Image 1 (cartoon, rainbow, N blue to C red):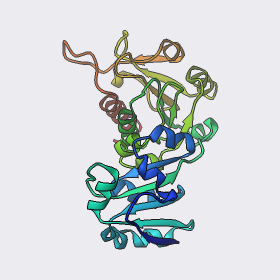
Image 2: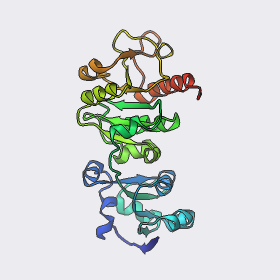
Image 3: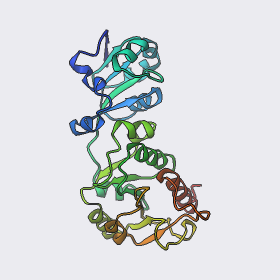
Length: 270
């Protein structure tokens, strides 16, 4: 269900999210996000999330029509030439396709743990750059991680930069928002989940020597400082990726890919 509106400016009230595209933290506080790019918007339309509106050149309407016709909620489609969109927003679009969706409610910790008999979870500690968190989310989706726990010192995976870096895979990944990650890790351990810290700044074993086969949560910290002392204290063991001399760490997305591949190898999914 959708209706179409041809526009010549961004003055209409419904276009406020597009006018303030770079104010994604304010959007998050209001409970919505902006999706950017053809593939990300397509994944939004394919998801179970509520879609509010799309803004795009008319040529994309027929591409999206089958997906739009399947939506049960009313979706407003704003159409304008790409050149006009770039003029109105003040920057160049790669594909000229944008969408607004409503942020979903966070998933409970029990729902994550009970997803299957041996869930593979991820916790984000101090990952404050949206692009880094989005890239981590993309790897979670690619390797079949069951859910992500976002700590209080990490940014939201529904900031526009995170949504863009995740290529829209955040729409299929369950998210639990933790107000105190150290306490949440304790709660995981009480539920039989082992907490494995990815931490290059401490004496640690390598991924191939860790046991990822059971219920476990891999905890990733910031690229600059690694895991916080509070998170370190709650980890059952610490794991480091072997590096060449003079190199002390990878970015969080690259490190996560190594961990996830090893976890899937042990679980017979590689």
